[in-house]
Amino acid sequence: MAPIDIRRCRRFVMGVLLFCLSVPSLAGALRLGVFPYFSAEQLVALHRPLKDYLAKTTGLHIRLVSAPDFRTFKRRTAEGRYDLLITAPDLGRLAEQNADYRWLGVTANRSEAVFVAPRGTDIRRLADLQSKRLALPPRLAITHQMALETLEGAGLKPGRDLAIMPRHTHDQALYAVIRADADAAAVGRPTWLRYDAPGKERLQVIGRSASIPGFALMAHSRLAPEMRERLRKALHAFAGTREGKAYFSTTGLGGVRMIEPADLALLDHYLARIQAAFEGE
Image (tube, rainbow, N blue to C red):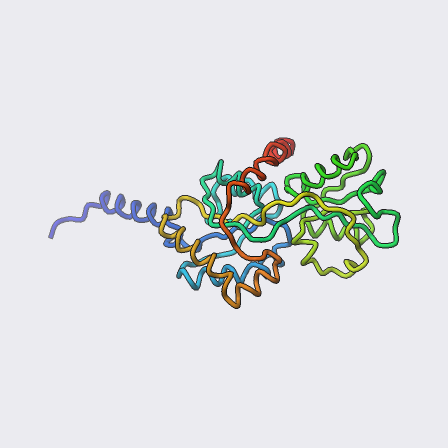
């Protein structure tokens, strides 16, 4: 019997390990990264039905993950730490351009910055925000930038004509005005529609920004093309199932469609402003 070549065995084992680590389905669960527009507990509750359906349909092991804040999520996306993404459309565009992610689709809803203020106050329209305190999601959120652009279009200069109060998440911005820590808030439409905190009924809409596409649904290019195609087909089929209809109703995301050139052009309109906010953090 020939003696065992230890070095050759070690090289073989290392090769197998490196191969496994390069294939997420073999190395462990695919990481489905959800950008942190709500708390981690809320994100898991909202998006578990989608994760479970994709896992059941494709046979892949998928795990929901997020990040403590927008900046960390953006950095982890740029590093390719997520195999799959549910993210803001502008971050999806950046992920496509800079981090080798590919579009699986975009949610069918439209989003916008929704401005809200307590009923029974002197704030009934955007012009009434003069000298007021406005709570917003983080500067790195597209809703923040859409809100600032809308204020500027209304003749208000943020930081001069009104105070801007960034919060870590959309729901925290909304909660700030409920608690009277701010005079008004602007949040993304999905948050406004789905946030059920006590006191929300005392708020009213005083303005809206222009709309943008819904959430970006993406896969990293390191996943094999056939795996990405299985995920894409499962994702689009999900909207027609009973579980999918409940999911898209609960989240307010409306369904799934393919990304279109007009969507990308609209997102590109915001990229310079978003990138400036990233560099300023």
